[in-house]
Image (cartoon, rainbow, N blue to C red; front, side):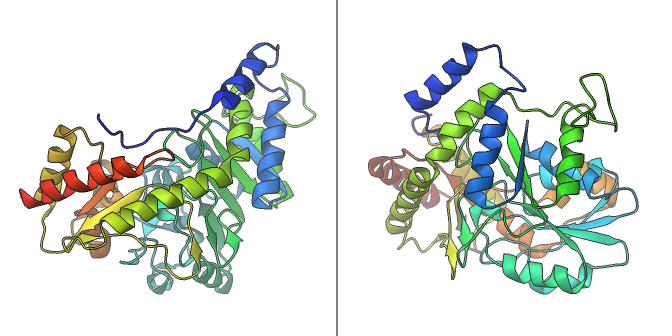
Amino acid sequence: MKINLSSPDVTEAEIQAVCDVLRTPNLSLGPKVPEFEHAFCDYIGKKHALAVNSGTSALFISLVALGIGPGDEVITTPFTFIATSNSIMMVGAKPVFVDIDPVNYNIDPEKIEAAITDKTKAIMPVEVFGNPANFDKICEIADRHNLVVIEDSCEALGSCLNGKKAGTFGKVSFFAFYPNKQMTTGEGGILLTDDEEVVEHCSALRNQGRGRNTGWLGHQVLGYNFRLSDINCAMGIVQLSRIEEFKAKRKQVAKWYQEELANEANLIVPEEGPGVDMNWFVFVVRLTDQFTTQQRDAVLTYMCEAGIGCSNYFVPVHLQPFMREKFGFKQGDFPVTEHIGERTIALPFYNNLSQEQVKIVRDELKAAISKI
């Protein structure tokens, strides 16, 4: 690609931190793991953090620790990465989808209460693309119905709503560190909570069921190897120390896109919204309503052939083949999600994307639209 869809921001400081760990005997279960966890607690403002090998693992073990399983329902969004609903299904519970807000693409608070049943145990909202809009309203609904909020903040590190940080709305929250995220550890994730029982249970689950005092061959519960290595955590410590730098860079790139695409009548360009301070995860524009999915796909094809990394973001979860087969979902079940998912285009977006590159993307996008 001439311009990639995403690219991590790695400097000599991260490389040196990794090399320093490689010169020690502590490649895993060493001092960098708790150092990374403590740094995250300090940044987010939570009492406990557990570093794990992926955001998906963090989602899964939190559900186990909260006692959610077969026969239970968890309300969530169909407009998200598949891991959100997968984690619910992995514990034997049922994801109950609620359609989304057509402006910010998060789960629509006005539609949540109609989906609550006597089987509902939790709400798992997602800060889609890094936007925490509506999360205060979601928490109010959960409180009224005595439901747990499990906050999938994997896309929202550094974002805030009315001064409150993403990762502080739920009883449990998570971030993920795949290389296209706001910061990266190569692969990895982290779970945050103020709940002592949840963190103790999750700590055992990530480390083959070992308790804090059971020793290497003592296993108090069924567990997994979801650990994150000191190599990853060393990189994460440096990346997290740069998060405000990253946020400023991403805000600048988003501003360039907003300026360059402001007068494009065929596009809906994202904005932050009232009270929202975003650390942008991706920059996703949307074709206006007269365009079809086939035309959107033609735009993607044209841009990829021109060397511009781009993608559709997201394919509605309920229309994935295995979800249709298991739950009987069909086209039309969540019309707002489907309408938006048919027209989205994720543009190249990363910290060090230049203004000149943004203009190249603009020109290729305009050319692609003109040809459909």
